Image (cartoon, rainbow, N blue to C red; front, top):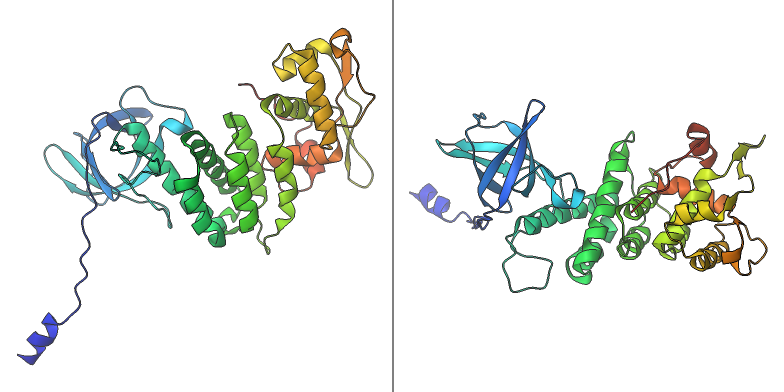
Length: 354
């Protein structure tokens, strides 16, 4: 009898079931061999979902599911999220699955980071929350000391547009590190991580977001993380989209040589006005002149004579500096010596477009 009384005194912890809601247009894609198959999501919570499907998955089977709005298979990163899930039950209409999120993922469906009184049940809202949770998990992995400030920034401090940019930066950096040996063990300085997320969140296009991701990924190291990588942040943050195109073009199209000491040097690069218009994606030559001068002031293009009435000239010099070449390599996720990047890829990646 005494043992029974002791049993009733055991502490009981109540864990409420994660709130489930319907998102009528939400679907998942799974692959049946090379063919993608679509299934409707009957309801979903932060822990799992119930899928309407005739697919006979075994209980305990691990699946790769791509969440998105029902319709054609999405390819844009912002419009879908691939999550690992384990089947936990099956009936005649479908299967229940449990999400297998990365360690540290702070998945909070129905508790939106967006300030609104409207329930966030649209497929895009669900996908954004999954992406945000994965981004937060990545930040916690590479810089545990930065996680609380990063959560505050990403859940409360950024607009919709800037949040999407910050998420893409983190997730692309995660993909870059996944390609490296022992990439999951690398760490970054918290000040560098937070500055990249905040400044990089202003990036207007995905290719510039990926430049920020490259700098973030290469800021991670196996040794004690350093704030030395902060020197690249103001360079990227002070570039507009057009200036970033000119910076990229100068690094791509300049001829380079490696001296006997292994250092890479760019040869003088002279571009015609027509070529500069193609690189910058603008016909405003006065604008291009001002952007070249700005890049020279940042130390990314070798200073040349001041152009007067550039619209009347037929060429300009845009030779990249050694700092520019190093930044360009880092933007592409290259962490080793800059000369190795250009030796492996003499004609580097094409200038990004809109």
